Length: 450
Image (cartoon, rainbow, N blue to C red; front, top):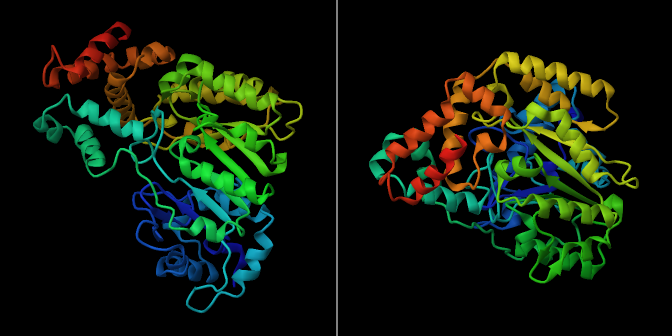
């Protein structure tokens, strides 16, 4: 057995998605995801010893990290960045999992397994429409896209690749997708040691509160809880998360806020954000001495002021008792809003600016190397055109516009012949009723900011 190519997740972990699909982990990348099974049609036992996961285990035992599943970790390790696979080895249960790995049957199955790590994205139920997201992960995205599509004829939708793609995405998706319980939570609640709640927005999901109640009533406050939340809500159906979280010691709880900007910039990037509410909720956690930190998705819309943003977020989250506070960066890889769509001269200036900041700041920053990788890539000019075209479409359902909210991008828009206005006018021209449709009511309002 080649230990250097082992990841403990296939022996200890389930990653459940809103449509019921179970993945080896949330870090896999690619057009086609490697699916282990589906919780809507299969039991946890069927999935955890099914053919797909047995195949994965056997490949790793033979000394191979499958590229189609593990490309992110492979890339990180080539860049000498600690990968999620390597990070998993720091978990307290890792030693027990390796003992189980040594007992793997010849066909890749395992006996008497314990699912130690749950990554739960039960639903796409969400109260935000984030620019880098899509209907699979946000119910608000689904309803907003359907509203946008209602302003265009089927002929226009069929002839426009962007509209057609959105139409196909939402055609067979419920506004809110949910994964049924199937009783597996109660069966495995005494085995779990680490739970990652994400979404959608986990704090508005009933399933999250069911698990939290279970753990609290069992006194299992030593189960490590990690959250990816938009920080818009701390209460749900009369329950307050802080009342529960106070029972978890700092080593066992981490509330990571998906905060990509501040003020009106945040309200455009993550539409549905009310910045004063988000800011107040973060301050509440800091004052209650609950471990929390920002997770920042870095795209073309916020990399332009990355040093300033890092300083603002660190100040917002600062607590002298939080010795592990850092600003965690995640480079957005969507082809239309990734960092590399910016002009090369812009990126060169940004590299110089960020390097000067990095050399002088004392703020701990995670995964800045990944941002540098994106900044060094040649410009994807097609992606830039796609960005302005898609932004002008998405602005139809927003109360502000891209150029109003992120004025630095006005200079970029001007240098490319006012692409935003050009595409905005095209959306107006293509709509069903240019004078009365709800789509164009929003468009006419947005002209003020063009």
